[in-house]
Image (cartoon, rainbow over all chains, first blue to last red):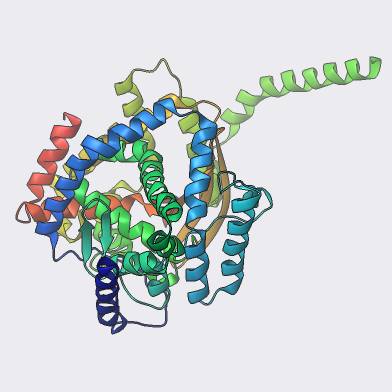
Amino acid sequence: MKFRILLSLCAAGSLSLLTACASTEPAQDTSDYDPLEPVNRVVHGVNGAVDFMVLYPAAMWYRDIAPEPVKTSVASFVRNINEPLNSFNALLQGDPDQAAASFQRFIMNSTLGFLGFNDVASDFGIPYRREDFGQTLAHYGIGGGPYIVLPLLGPSNLRDTAGIGVDYVANPLTWGAQNSDTAEALYLGSVGLTALHYRYATINQLNELQKSSIDYYAALRSLYRQQRNQMIRNGGPSPEFAVEDESASFDFDDAVEAASQ
Amino acid sequence: MVNSKIAISTAAMIAIAAAWSGPASATGLSSNVVAEVAAETSAANVIQSMADQAMNELTDQSLADDVRRKKFVSLMDRYFAMDVVSRFVLGRYWRSISEAEIEEFSVLLQNYLALNYANQFKEFNGEQFVVGDETQKNKDTFVDSQFVRPDGPPVNIVWRMRMFDDSYKIIDVSIEGLSMGITQRDEFTSVIQQNNDDVGALTAALKAKTGL
């Protein structure tokens, strides 16, 4: 319980810092801001070691052993357990239609889809969309702030770290886990399955990236920023300003001009 | 039945006739006409012909890895504005090296990308590449395309192109919203920064990777 209060305070504290720099456009970060780089690189290294010893072998085992239908079911379950938060955050972003869709998915998949192991809602034409509190903040124009590599969780930034805190506190399942052993087991199980699923889902790409990159840390940092930008604009095309301004210091126009000299 | 037989043999005749006349009419075209056709080609058509060429040349499983990489490099030469891409991925550091060093870097970059991507074509099996719409934003044309896999959802690829001397060249590729150019620039400039702003460190690392 103390942990929960502490987390709420941390989240509230960083929120008040972040809202100071809010604007009306959804935030799109165009360059890496990493004042904590030396610390981040250390945490990145430790995460890599922990991953190599625990999560990576588990994901490899899961990849090779689990049959395809099991993987599909786990993916559906992991997404379904997140639907209340998706709905909550869509509502906070002023998108009641999406909030209703996520809620509808949750009801359908939890019942007809047997605790979410089958994604029947997608078959009915209601696609999944992930919304978290970091995206909600970005929707109101709050930029990512400094890049942070979280222990165990990996790439994040100040805004999204605050978002993780708020989502944790707002998650009905973590409330339920306080009072019910079943809910607690379900919550812990879902955390484990989520970790396994996401590590498995990214295993090929990350292996490739690790092998091909010269600075794996910097490549991950760039990809995290771009992926969050993408999620914040819900997969839509880059706004005009972000297209031309993708790099604050040097963009494609500069490169074209440079090449023509 | 009789009708369809006649139809088939007519079709065969036409096909044979076309095959015969094909080379003759091709030689009849002057290089002028070819140039004009190239200028009128839309950005989407350029992507389509690149994809066709890549599928033809790179997916042959019997190809040796280094041959495939060479073919990949020559495809990039033809379809990418490599002088622009090279400077873009160096960020503002392109200024700190000489013209000759940029040339050298460009070759290294192409070989580095070939090393990372050319082998992806080796495992092609039943995948399809579909070119979609193009949109104009400021100076650039963005061509949407999809890589359709038999297992799993399709992958969205967007080609950022710009007109140079009347023909479209690729300056960036985004896969599921992740720009390869921006990722590479962020990584490369980080390497340079970590080595006291020395571009030579990056070039050395690329040489080590590519074995050039």
